[in-house]
Image 1 (cartoon, rainbow over the protein chains, first blue to last red):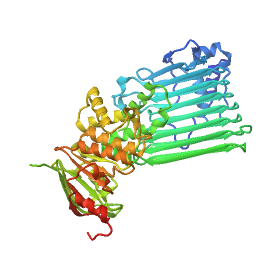
Image 2: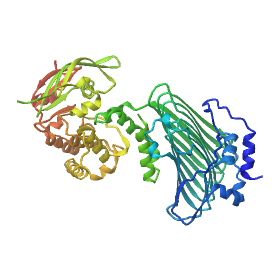
Image 3: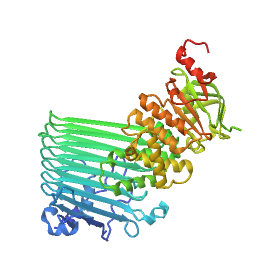
Image 4: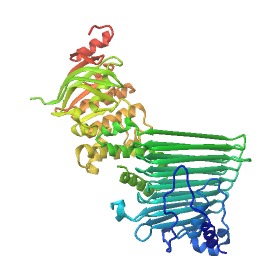
Length: 375
Length: 246
């Protein structure tokens, strides 16, 4: 039985899951009968890009992909994405150049493309570097259309990252779908000795977004960092889960999340740090900062530190607060309207993360999206 | 005839239920420089914040006419667009926005049109020279990582760019070394013209070596208890606030 058929069978035997904190929307898991082509560019000869569906047939190591995640969106999502993926790429880098090669992937939802199910595998061979940008967006012509006139769109995605010994991988994810879209995305990173993986996750679109990223820091001196930005529109729902499994000695991790929530938004943030046996002298920290822009917002922050090893350092911090009134006052005293001042304050709060993104176009796009969506 | 910039009548305000301003009366005309002095807790910064419209302050009574308009009915940004400027005692940091972009956008908000990039930059550089500021500050994020003195100079740079009708300087001298005080207040004096007015709030009269006010007011316990010329500041310097019966 092939990879797709195996997962389709497993999926079809399962029931639609029920989530307690953030209830799932209806009409999930459509089965599209079309493929979605991304706009993809690569700037290096040392990077190999193959469509996921082709790699599955030709690359046994890909077909045997299995990942034992502690936290994830659930087996239903895994089997659905593996079984019905209509997009995705396998990206392999052997580049050891000082400047990392960049693979830039854009998916456009809208028009005839209502459902995107993408499966990505990102591999950095020993000592290699790789930057991957994945941008989910809509046609510009849809920007000003009323949400009521747009078809319901949904994205279901899964990205596996394999960072081999001494490699360096950075993944920049930007989700800026329509307000009415659903977005489910998970990243699993396997980090070997002295390898470093950074995931920048920016969520500014879609009314329902569920994110689950999990790192397996299995090598000595392995490092994993998640930097997350989110904007929860009015009435939107967000379920964010970020997990670091420290298994290697002297491994290092950080989770930093900055968010802004508008009226009636519901958000759950889960930050999990696991220190397994053998992860001695490891350090992990998680921080979440949320800015409340309106009324009737429910924001749950659930940090967890689980230690099976004595000699580790784990830290967490979370803060929730209204927009800084003094900052708003300062900006308004210079002629900025309240809404413009609010946008500047939100962008200033995101800046701590965005300043680490080396791609100006990415940063500018995020700023434009904040300008477009905050009202 | 000298035109009125601001007329304050019996202004009373409170914060968290506690009355701070207890009836302020003050007229400022174009071309004038006023200094308000007073002890700690007298209400000097409160007056500045109430005039600019800080949301933490409630106006309980009084009228303020600014440029022939009802100031108290305006939102904060409308006050700025009408020509009111406050140099903050503690300027806020805004990461992600460079000084140059901030100034250019603020100028657009206040003036209504985006200034031409080249001429704007030229004017900026000239103002920065006056304030003895390195042009590298233009590329830095607004007030982020600035020293106290740099922040205050940046406030005066904003004043120079926005060209307000009334600039209120709230203890701009605090945190400045003696050289910076000279540079800042000599610049403020240069920015004073027949079309605008300046209201300086300060504890000390050391700034008077560099700027010549037309009027000095003493604010104690939420009221202006005495007004006079620059000799009043000298009197306060020698006798202090507490040993006097106002």
